[in-house]
Image (cartoon, rainbow, N blue to C red; front, top):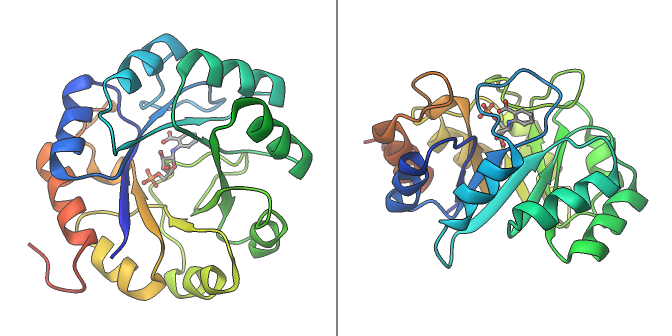
Length: 214
Ligand SMILES: O=C(O)c1ccccc1N[C@@H]1O[C@H](COP(=O)(O)O)[C@@H](O)[C@H]1O
């Protein structure tokens, strides 16, 4: 069974709906260089994540322009974990981990397995996503789950499968790629960064199923 992260939350009510549905992790997005309906400022990110109860991982998704800024942001927002998108070196990831003692998830493009392998021993987990040219996620685009599964089997790090998942496709994605966790943002959204609570609940339930959807 895959763990579930519901990401791109912008409102307290949506965060509570994700927790009530049984999400293992929730994510808020801050400081990204792309135009995203899911982005909130660091103060709002801190406020939202402060409401996350014990046993649910509060995750900050971000693309700051330096490792120093990442550390600063983590000290302001105080999440349990950070999901970094964009270009990073292994030394920068090590620095952020050492300075903040937070779990660092690194997003890598599904079409770049060499990068995933290069960071396998450096990050705490790898998010296999369909990213744009800047490395940002939230594209709503899927990738080849069978290939992602082959890559996950070669890696030591836990693999989070992301990219265009929906309540209708997540069971098939889990069956095919057998990831440690699945992650969704746009696939459970109404519009303007607001979540569809029914879709969130179905996504969490279906991630725990093989083929039988509700
Ligand atoms: O959602 C965004 O706008 C975003 C911007 C910059 C970096 C990451 C972003 N989203 C993350 O990408 C994955 C997959 O999203 P989706 O399900 O394909 O919409 C997820 O972790 C998002 O939070």
